[in-house]
Length: 157
Image (cartoon, rainbow, N blue to C red; front, top):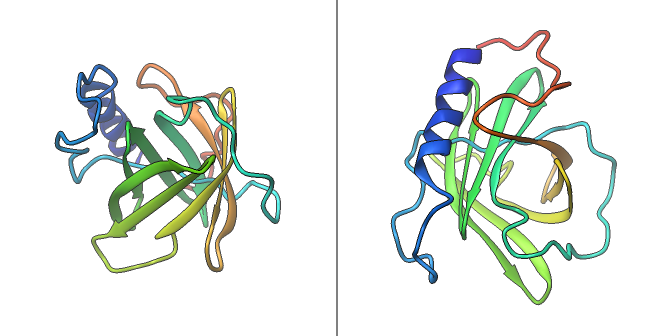
């Protein structure tokens, strides 16, 4: 499992960050790109995110239901990968001061189809997903490595 997640992170590290495409019209992340979510967040939403441009970019990791989840944002492109679960792709856009994530998953699930970014603070990202998932907290992965303190016990395929 760690090898698959590390591979997804390596793909992300190679596929973005240096784009000269200001309008986001270039091709987005490959289907193997990952996105992360963490069920460790609090309940309910907060005021609209006021994250500076680019603050949302990067690879974010969490665990949910015993599975690793990776959320990747590159410009306005977003992708999500959950071990043993779907691969999702879509957008991460800011409109009227609120950052929204819209994803379409290859298996048709809609658990993470629509989300609102509650906060981005340093290495922590909170997203409230519409529906049963509620708020998930993600930890930023730096330099293609897993963040410290990420719960990995019990992760299975």
